Image (cartoon, rainbow, N blue to C red; front, top):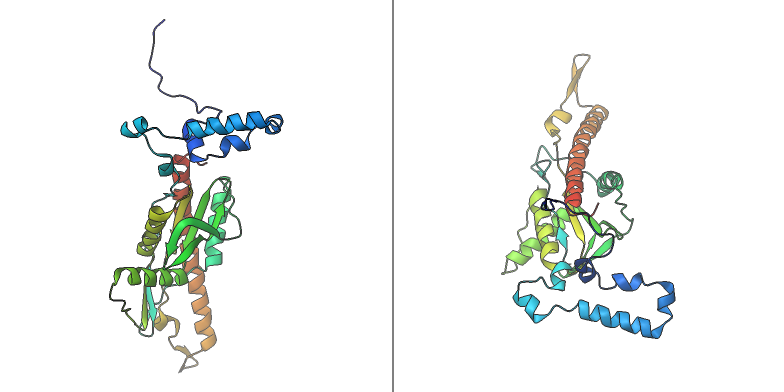
Length: 274
């Protein structure tokens, strides 16, 4: 018999020690029903878990990971599809077209459910994360798979930018302007870092942002037209042109957002979540 090194091994069907460290109540939840009625057995199980969930000093010196280190949030990188930059205000002649939070979350739900990740309809608090003094709640989550997601919308981008400015500006003064500038990738990274540094419970967190794939040229939209030799400005025609342009731009933004979610799915697969 010739011995050869094992290149691949199957994941065991039973919980590993690291999985038990990650979820201390795992074994308790799966006790046989008959055992639960025996006080002596319950006490023995409790003692067993207590011993095995304790990291000895020798293990720490050897560089073994502490259990608490594995309970922190696992945060995905920002998957950049779409420039995600633009501005609005009185002097802006080419404002971007935004996706609503409802539109974006529907895209995210549709893509994730294909891979067995079903997001609930309620917001989910991310334990340990506070932003501007408020507890942070993700837009949606799958509690069974411990997946939580957040879409950085127009409104949230502004709120997070103000929070970041208050954090970084020690003097407390805030810049006031009639023009709102959006940099969604930058803001999404800020949020992801907040969750990564503060999340104290195991959750696989993904941040998505509005791609802002196009802008409305107001001069083109509201240009006068010639009719019967007369130059007139028809509000109805202008509104139709604007609606048509918004539909085209939103379709492209939706496509780019789907690419963000598809990259997140690949990341979840790499984490062994799905």
